[in-house]
Length: 423
Image (tube, rainbow, N blue to C red; front, side, top):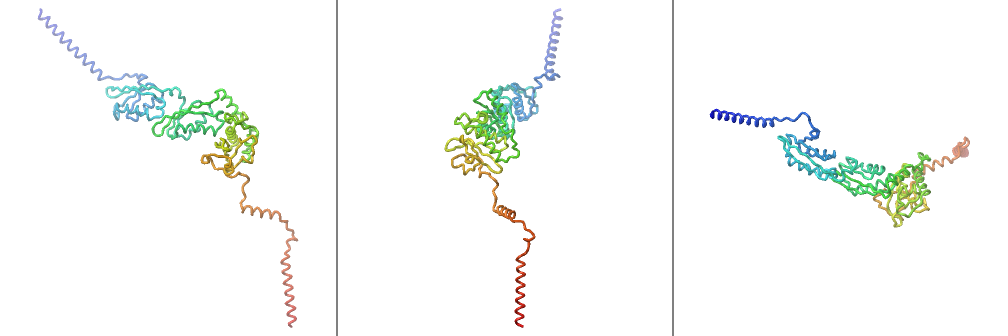
């Protein structure tokens, strides 16, 4: 009896052992033969697969450009390179060699895991304070169009402008200078002179990102009111200027300033708005207003910053036909057209000083076209012909020929007489 019971126990133990071996072997085989589920989750759909370090770098840039704080990158099974080394290099390059990332990103961290035959990286990106306050970023391939972008921002009343340029040599100081130049060339694009601060972020291959902040002394409400007044300003709307010469247009603008704007000695009266709407401005405000009037009359004009009698002073240079000339409408209340309207460098240099290398050379005042010696002689001959009396048939009688005939007849008579005497 005991022997039978022992045999039964041995059989049960062997059976359990065999069952256990079968269980563990089956579990191991199921892992080897694992297949992903047919349904792909949203998280799986956001994966980016890369094949080399260039595509890895681009994948990181894509995640950042989309403003995502989390990202997943899958390294292809045939990835060309070492995922561990390339991940570290790519994150460093993106942070230091891309202007947008230098502006936006504060830190990039990641976890790199090997899943059987491939690697997977999970990224965590923390953004700087600029990210949430950057607004719309304007993209330009080259810096040539940046002045137009700045002008549009000033006209719209924007307080910030962010421009990403693929190839640019401008420094932050250059961009601040451009803001001032745009305002001086377009003095009513904003009613008050803008102050600006520029933060620059650099990337590789001359890539630059500029964050431009605009400041104004006037409130936003006051600026809106002033913009409306300037937009309605059209002093020549009732005048047909289409047939006027450039010289006459320049005189029209000059006379408008002289008649409608008083000269101020205050440094705060320095805008075109002060001159055109307020009716009182210093030399800078008057010169900026003259630029705007010339724009309305389709004349080329710019403002000159220099000195008059060793005092800081502004005036204008205007293009008329093939000439450039000086015009100063902001010298005194009693402005003398003869001394400050369409003048040359030579005539202005007596009491004015300016950086001549920064402005076009101004020649003599363009009056009527000069007449050359040949043209003068031709004109004199034409006048002589016009002054000569009209010839009548009686005046066409050839008196000298008649006299010559009379002399021949007399000579023949003398020969006849002499011949007769000889005989």
